[in-house]
Image 1 (cartoon, rainbow, N blue to C red):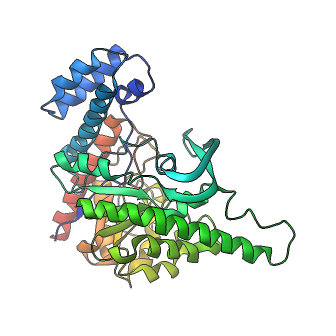
Image 2 (image 1 turned 90 degrees about the vertical axis):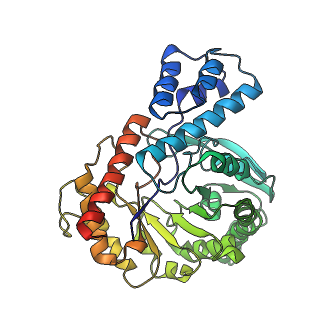
Length: 384
């Protein structure tokens, strides 16, 4: 059985994709970038894009939609050219992972910008009335990508716990008065109600609609999962409610990054048979030295927690916060170390630590291409 590769979610948006939607005039460099990548990726219809971009400004609604189509196509072809097995378009359709879904849920009001990381910002919202799904906000995205992808498509969906944790609550907490009795219990009850509303009435319908459209690989992104260690039980509950009767019908993975993963165990093992894959970030914590022992592979100690369960291990082998291009031999050793612990290649899916949106496409492509080459080296050495 060969090892499977996939990309976790985000890629940078090309300047020629961003500027038309912000009504900023394109430069020669923007158009040259579109031409360079169009030729490198062998996009058959690329001349149609070049003709549209030649206007440089004042694009019509239809032209902007076509530009969006091409940025999605470029991103998918880039992953395919790198050799990735499960592909996506790197959020070309989205603002980012929080604002995009929240804009499509009634009851939220945006309050202002907050910083996430790497000088990236997102707009934070507050729930002020009962949440209600406005639209199945990933359907069009999936249908478009699926129409031209040459590999199976995986769609990431921001999970209920992260949406709630990254939001203010002015609705479920509105009747709780400071200083009243049992306030901790009341606040946790309100939090639980908020989470269940989003899980049952927003995330589940979105996932179900994607399944009905033909999606068979879905990733629930939960970077906030371990933010509050006394709410791991609520995170587990929202995951169960979000998937519900879709269990077994879709390959479900979850992506949790840059946190204390040990806090999730043993509670997350309740999701065996519901979640298929659990993806963590590993390479960011690891050394850059070759080797397959624990001294060299310091970032991979959490793998021991997967020895006695059946989860597929989403193995982060690329550090997404640096332009360092991991050599294939380093990626090979990281995979071989994981194989030695897990003992089953069907339970290892190789991927970057997280989305590559903070890297240029040139850097992202080189990293992904080496990741695939490293996977082949690991398969050869392991006799797969």
